[in-house]
Length: 444
Image (cartoon, rainbow, N blue to C red):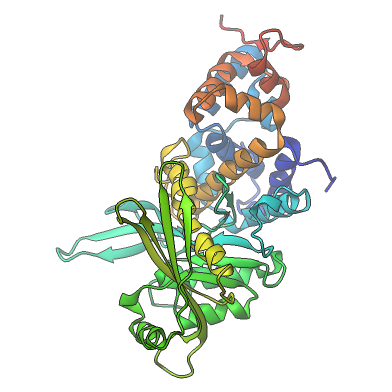
């Protein structure tokens, strides 16, 4: 693959390379109208442009003018219908797209764009969070999980683990390849989030340098089998650890605190409006469970108090394999708190700001939902990268104060004008006197 600067052309190249490795599962036929590549690119475009109607507009453009933006911006020669896209993609495993996430991660890493995601100890954080993206009482497929309710009705749903690189001071997150929570061949038990996390570690551990990534997870993850699995696959961890699920550990902590072995530093912070007291507690080498052999972990807690009235604003606790002292406990707690970014800044955008993670673009009978949600994540990742590496994109986004406004402008312009390429479109958005005027569509 030709090495290009990290830009729109290179991102497209990653996707094209992944498509080139796919085997078309359809039998060869003279009646085949659209290639596998056209179906994948067509599906990706719908999410990248945040509009299922974009392809239909471009089909009309081509019928009137002989040209369209799906071709000039994305290299899509023939435009399949949404139904044709669904039928083809239902046959394709989403795993074919996972390498695109890895390629983008490597490019960001080697280009220095992830330096701002490193902690003081050079670690980067990967937040694990499971999310549901389809639920129905009637529509289901072999990949669905199910839930039987007390009244006898059954709900069918799809869930996935959506890992993302986060940082306490970064407003963006970097999406990584998902792991789907789905019935596993040869296993009668319902799949679960922690089992998916183990599969993700096994699949992707080779992408990262050993013990340079710290996994973040909620209380589901702070069990000895998963903590041991993370270490065995060369990941560090910071997992939420609640008293309600770790009674033995907290009995140990009560004993150690009574003997002065739980340390309690405090930091006074200004939040822009008022002073807060950040009260830490920590202890190293605490048994994670009652049953032997018990793994020793390091435990910490942070309580945030508003100084002027003593109101408690926040309380949480974690276990980690990172050694704790008065300085490192602050960074570990900040890292643990940053897991919420996957919900607020990753899933929230995917669900509510145009990417429609929970919208049913099609269910299919085999792989469709998983393939579409992976294309959705890739579209979100590509836009994240473009905001970092493309100055024109940055300026165009800044001029349209909201994400919705930006995509509304994209759709309006590409509905009536034909642009030579992506940079031509952005140049036109940024200036009243562009060097290259777009082609005006024939509306007669």
